[in-house]
Structure formats: C-alpha cells, structure tokens
Image 1 (cartoon, rainbow, N blue to C red):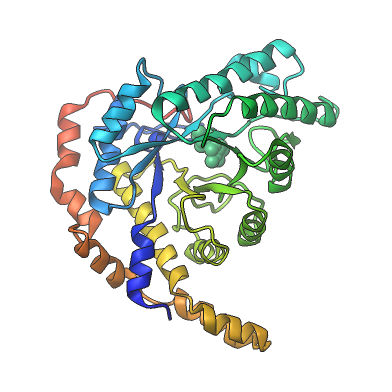
Image 2 (image 1 turned 90 degrees about the horizontal axis):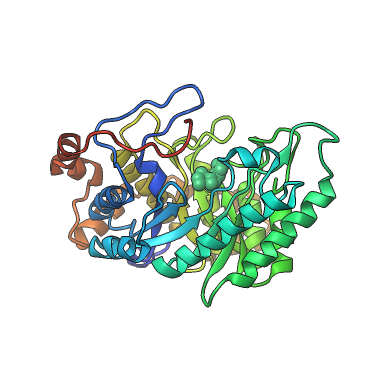
Length: 386
Ligand code: AOS
Ligand code: ZN
Ligand code: ZN
C-alpha cells in the first residue's frame, strides 16, 4: 500500500468543483419541490458554496451556468467568490431552453438560429474573460426525434463550424470542454452522443479542446473507466461531471449508486497521470428532495473517499501481478485498496488542516441552515424541471 502521508499530500491538492445550480431548487418534469432558504441569486449560491468549502476544504471552485447565473458585473461576482475563498470554474453555456431551439441550436437547420446559439457561446467566453474562468463547458441538447427528420451529416458539419468559431475565440489558457450524452432530450439521434463523437471534434479543433465525461451519460453497462483511460492516454480528458445514475441521467449524488465504479474511474485517473490541474473534477448534480448543502458536502466526501482508495492502490504490487499473469493477485491488489476504510485517514487529514473531522456534522452545528431559512425567502430555481 502507498504510504498514508503520500496519499494525504495528493488528496490535499484535489479541487472538487461544485455546480452553482446544485444549490438552487430543482426537480423533475413532474415537480420541483421548493426548499426553504435556497439562494435567491448567484451571489447567495456562492455564499452556500463557501460553506461546503469551509467544512470540506476540498471544494474551492464553483461552476456557473449562463443564463441561470446572469449578473451585471461578472468581475464583481468573481471578487465575491474570492472573498469567500472560492474561485469561479467552468462557464456552462445554455442553448437548450428557448423556443427557437426546438430543432436544435448550433445544429439547427436555420442559419439564423445557429447564429443566435453561437453568439451565446461567444458571450460565455466574454464572461470567462471577466471571471477568470479557464473552461467553457458545452453540452448540446441538439438531435432529432424521428428518422429522416434532418440530415445527420449536415448537422455534424454545422456543429463543427460552430465549435471552430468558438475555439478561435478562446484566449490564452482557456479550454473548450465538450460534453456528450447518449440521449435526452432528443430520442432518435443526438448530435454529440458519445465520447467518440466528442473526441473526433476535439481532435480536429486542437489542443485546447477536450472531452468531459459526465458519469450519468452512458448506456447501462458501459465501462466508463475504459473511456477515461483512453481519453487520458490521448491527452483529451478535460474533466468530469460527476453524479450517480440508477437509470438514465439521474443526477444523484456521486458515489451513491455505485461507489465501486467511482473507485475504478479514479484508479484510471491516478494511474493515467490525470490527477492534477489538467482534469477538472466537477459535480453535475441536482438535489431534488434532499437538503442541498449537506448533500453537496457528502458528494465531495464521496469523491475524496474514492480518490483516497485509488491513491492507496499498491502500484508496484499491481504491476508485478499483472506482468506475472496473476489474474487473481492483480484483482486482489485493487480490491484491497477498495475495501480499505479510508474515513479515518480523511478525518486525520481534515484535522491536520484545522477542519472538523466530520464535515456534515460540523455544517449542521454551524447554524447556517437555520440562518438561511430565516434570511432568505423565495429561493431561485436551478433551472431544471420548470
Ligand atoms: C445535461 O444533461 C448535462 O449534464 C449538462 O452538463 C448540463 O448542461 C448541466 O447539467 C447544467 O448546465
Ligand atoms: Zn453534465
Ligand atoms: Zn446530464
């Protein structure tokens, strides 16, 4: 096993990025259950994110979503974040919530709609300039519902054209992160349905274009860690949208449905040299019925636990078993790490950093939940399930 001190040192460098929309009310298309005390604007979302950071010490970055987080002064929003020990992360574009996008956004058959969508993406890069964000995260709801509805290859051409225009606009140190999803809201074809499509576009675009793996965006049974290993090997893994799924794009807490899968993914990240500033560890979750801040704290802890276990894997023993063809031995090395209770190690790490060993309990004791219920009336909807 790797020495606990080395594991702790690596864990201290991990920055988990929480999504602004996870702090707001959300739901399914059937119902949004409003919760008391949720943020009324992006400023208050950052105030809540600061609580997650305060108790975990591992969530210093917050992703924004435009237009849900539209403000007049983005530099001031970035300042607000900085004053709370946070920084602004990926800017998530939204070209899926307007009537104009019925047939798609950048893949729409009408050039005027495509232009409108592209203008929004370019505006998001302007916002990145103001916030200091490094990543533009693109997910497109584009696709078709019926065979023959539109030309599959023409739509790819339109997509490539828009991506190239956005790529051109990127500044120094900025990246375009392209996310894929196999279906929904389109049910026949989706224009970026899988890692292969995303990879092909990113490869053409160049170095600043990389793929985002949302763990909820695959068909059941897909071996996600293989995709992670492959993208890392090609230098094309830009980051994750972590969440859990039981059925489709459920957006439940990461590590809740399948902690073993999360461990296997983190093993590939650690083994593939992706544990560093290059790969963004973002959450993309919605807390529809559970209290949001403790759920996000729990999610951060789940990622930390999976990471700690992946860091514990005895790489030398694994390599020796693999080259000896020792199937069971190699598997046992991984399982040893997975079956290790890393909670004491993480508690120790928190104490060494001056934090409470139990972040959820510390949050409950802090009085923040009562305070926001008292002070905030009429919280903002995250944007989903309107
Ligand atoms: C949608 O299914 C995706 O997961 C996107 O990442 C989406 O844009 C995000 O959930 C909110 O911006
Ligand atoms: Zn996502
Ligand atoms: Zn999703």
